[in-house]
Length: 114
Image (cartoon, rainbow, N blue to C red):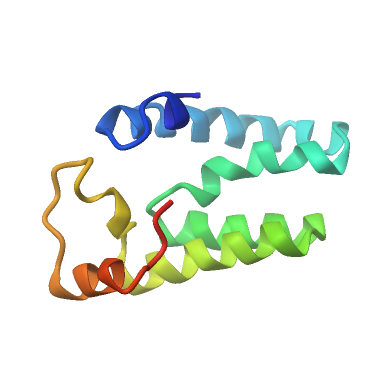
């Protein structure tokens, strides 16, 4: 909810760590397998939103197993950005981070905007 309620500000990302911890706990308990496949993505999104290469890889694996091509495409796109920059450049302004020249070029050319 904070990601939409506070879009464009640092507050949007403030609970990402908490969401990730709950998602990791839920997956370890197998809760994602207890809901219909269309709802499983909500367990996996905290991985996709992480600025961490290992968690991005896990997101791609989770979405791949889900079998939804669109969700997998988004997960792969997120992973590619983290592999390239180590973070999501579209968050820089909201988080008070300076963009590198490569990041700014990516954004100026219409790169992923979240």
